[in-house]
Length: 476
Image (cartoon, rainbow, N blue to C red; front, top):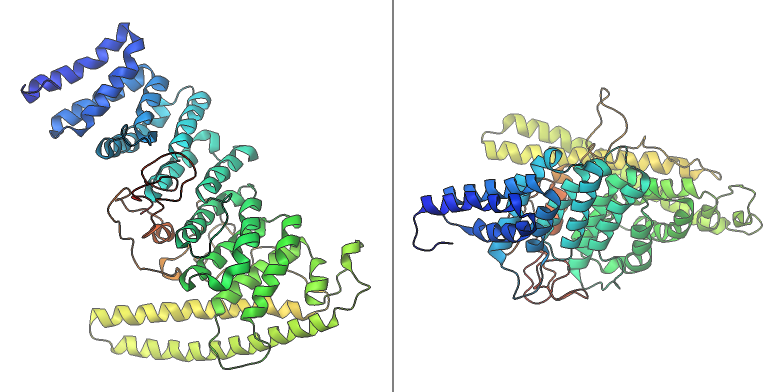
């Protein structure tokens, strides 16, 4: 703009651009486009003038200005999109527009719907950090607030499900897809708590993931099972009946019938027992044929005339065996805790102390895991067990709820401690979009190293994210 002129002259020209729209509002979109081009200015004083000019236009006509702004981040055509320009536009929207939503988005119902629609169009070509940024903003809007009707909350689930590619056939060798699925399911859990349906996610797991669970990367299995456990309380009776057979099969795999000396995965069993209880609570008589129970509901699905006694014998033997293993683990962990305390008292260096504290924390989590297993296994020995359908079991990876705190977790409530998640200990942004870190460490780790270029069946993007093709710069 005005090459060869001084910064002072350029700044004055920038400040004057919004004035063109006072009497000729039809030029507003074009002026926004010009100002967006200037967001890449090297001089701070010029960028500051551009920011102020764009905010002035937003206050004149927020709908037209937002529409023009978002065109610069939703464009996926190779020749139409400039990375640096898109990044600067995103930064402006995040830092200048989103914080002023209460002032700019008026009338709220109409303008919040408008910006929601703009964001949904933009999500076809985003990085993980961008997706989380947009979702955090959408959650903050009044139309999706605590008093929002169920269909609004479900709309957010549909957005997350779209990013998880739940319409795609699953390929077990596609590590990116399973990682993305796990992260998106984790992001969806607070909305399940608010009444949105988890049916699409859980049925996808049941149809595509559970049959090949053995083939999944080890580091992904526990995160998937944790998400499954946290989703289980919000499952419908119909879906519970469909999913229970897969859960029982996985329990049988990880609860041996006889002690064989191999290493046990207590975390898997904690997740699966918690899931089993909550699904069985919703569809109790489905366990008659699966586990040999004698639960009477008066429905033909009770199948009380059939003999499933062998199933009961096998299931309770597996429970007994694993309970013995859990008790032995508790004894070993308790002894280890005492040794850690002594070593900590004698430790000299801060590095040694930190290492011992981490070991002690892991032992504490292990004790909680084993105690949860015993609490959940005990009632399952009865012929007509009472399944746990409330939250009296506090899962080992979740923070302990203090007695003074509310007993139920809200959408902003209990979080997973960082140490409970498998994988790398930090989020390492890579080249491409999404250089900024995300507050939620689980989401950070899920996004780490993901690049979804070349998988798109929608659009002709450049591999920026979930949908793009080509250079695969995406979901890092």
